[in-house]
Image 1 (cartoon, helix red, strand yellow):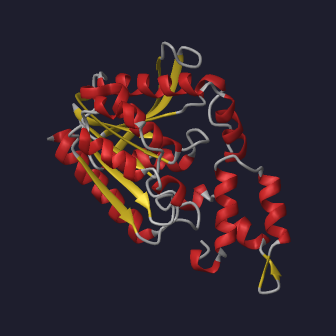
Image 2 (cartoon, helix red, strand yellow):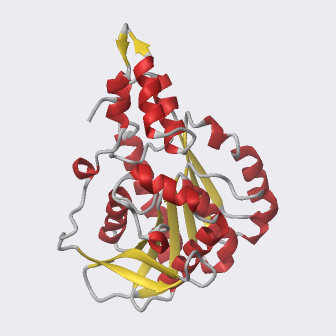
Image 3 (cartoon, helix red, strand yellow):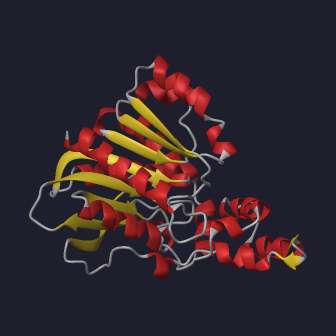
Amino acid sequence: MTDARKIDPRVFDLYDEYCHGHITRREFLSRATAMTVGGVSALWMAQALLPRYAEAQTISFTDPRLKGTYAEYPSPGGTSGTMRGYLVQPAGDGPFPAALIIHENRGLNPHIEDVARRAAVAGFLALAPDGLAPVGGYPGNDDDGRQLQRSLDPDQLDQDMINSARFLKSHALSNGRLGATGYCWGGGMTNRLAVALGSDLNAGVPFYGAAAASADVAAIEAAMLIVYAGTDTRINSMWPDYEAALQANNVTYEMEMFAGTLHGFHNNSTPRYNEAAAAQAWNRTIGFFRAHVIG
C-alpha cells in the first residue's frame, strides 16, 4: 500500500469530498489529473487512495475462531420493513456480549465485515447491518454503494440501524448487554443510536462521526468513548458543543484525539490508514466494551 506521506494533502482533501459524496469518482480523478505535484500529475495519488479490500482482510471468513452467517430480521418503520446483516459469533456456545458494527456511507463493504470478525475474535457476538439490504444490498463497489445510500430516506435508515441493535441485543446468543461502534456515517449513527436506545445501550464508540444534537444528549445513558482524527477539522469542530452537552447531562464519556491522523485512519484498505493509531484505537474500543458491556 502507498505510504500516506507520499500523497499531497490536496489529494486527501479531494478524496474526502469524494468519500462524502460531494463529487463523483470521475470528478475526483479528473481534478487529481489536473493537479500537479513536482511537475507530475497527481492522478497516481488519487488512484492509490481507492480502497483495496482483498489486500486489507485481516481475518478470514473461514477462521476457526468464529462462525459467520447472514441474518435477516424485521425492521418496522425502516426502509422496507426487513433488514439483513452479517452476524458473527465467537467459537463456543455463548451467550456472548454483543457488539453492533455500523458501516460508513456506502453500505456493508468487505472492510466492515472484517471489523465484525475482529470483534468476534475478541469475544463478542457481532452484527454488521447492511443499510442497503432493503435496496438489494452492498452492490460490490463503493461508488454505487454511496449513491444507493444517499438515495435512502435518512430517518428510515436510522430506524433500520436502531432495529438492528434491538435484534442483536435480544438474540438467543446475546447476553443482553450491547455495545456499538461505527465509522464516519456509522460514527454519527452510533451517537444517534445512543440517544435512541437510552439504557438499552451499554457503550458507544463513534469514530470520527457527527455529534449527537445537544438537545438530545440528555437521553444518552451509555458510556461513550468518542474517537477523533487529529486533522479532521469538520467533524472535530462539533466536539466543544458535544462535550458541553455530555458534561451538562452527566454522561460517562472519554474522548481520544489521534494527533496527525486523517478521517478514516482506522480503515486499513486505503492510505489514510494509520497503523499505530488504528491499533491503539481498536484496543481501546475492545477495552471499553469489556469494561462497560461485559462489566
